[in-house]
View (cartoon, one colour):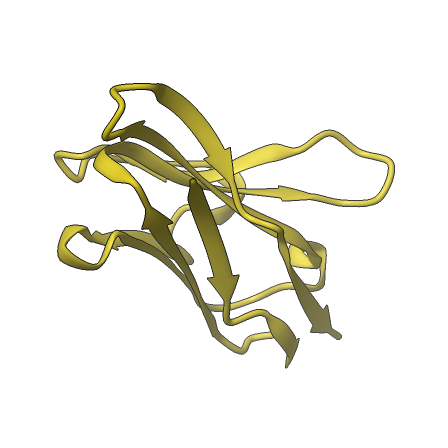
Length: 120
């Protein structure tokens, strides 16, 4: 059993900051890439940022220079620092992780989502 638990969402004014966290727990042998996605109602889920096990990062053009993804491998946790937030960043944010379990099963796990609302 593997779980991803997100935290850190909330309501913030435009120009403000939030830090999202996503902790993985359970029968984890190793974690490969981790990432953050977001999804607005009626729209497809889109990549926000991703980070490999070697800490190579990738960002959506819309968040480059404002968001920073990082990970703490000792804590099986990925973070998303969001600065200079804009109303269009309002979304439900989901983390995911490519995890190999102790049974050597490889699967992409998702968190439950956390709401980020940016007021103008």
